[in-house]
Image 1 (tube, helix red, strand yellow):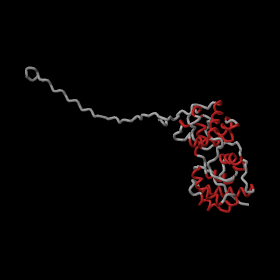
Image 2 (cartoon, one colour; image 1 turned 120 degrees about the horizontal axis):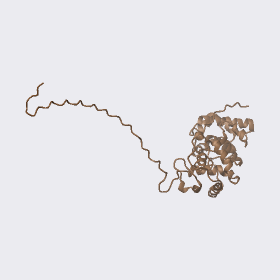
Image 3 (cartoon, one colour; image 1 turned 90 degrees about the vertical axis):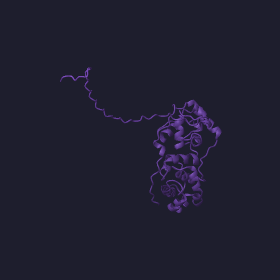
Image 4 (spheres, helix red, strand yellow; image 1 turned 180 degrees about the vertical axis):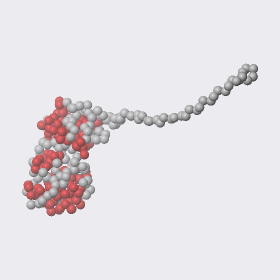
Length: 278
């Protein structure tokens, strides 16, 4: 039996971010049309992470925490060529895993987690990735978001993993406002029609990544803009709305001037030129 030590999971930076200001929640009657349009544009969306089986998907999602899919995809081909099963990854060992993923942020902690979860999969699950959320979250480096992605992408469960893009889109559009990823996930579970739940995660993620971008959303290219309740929609002519200029009040120093002493008035001479008697 392998003795493993769990490494703390990287915390999501957006977990406590303030929701983006919108004019209110999206109308329920509009939500079905929103997903119908997203589905028409991309009927069968998939993750942009490169993988070839549930195990390599699990590893790729663990490595993607606080990193881009592009960055992860640059590192994983060589890693998965060397080890694409829990047994091979466990034999590869933490040090060699680290060398393969050193271009990815937090690679030290992630190398420990990948090595540890590989050993646990062998020990507890006969080298097979479980499709149960509780079992997945018991693995080092696997949180609720990672578990939801694996369950959805690898096993076809209609789970909705809330990452930074989905958190932003849900709040900005008014689709499912919430102050935390868990609150947004719960809201999405309620408002997303069953027909669209299987691919809802990917549609919203890709929409946030390429259209409803963080700094400057591409509202003119957005196919669901008419249903969005975001206050600061961009336009073709003006681009991003400018914030109103604020005038700062400057503190002025009081200038203290010394008053000159008044001169004593000279005694008036009498009209005839004679001095007055004292």
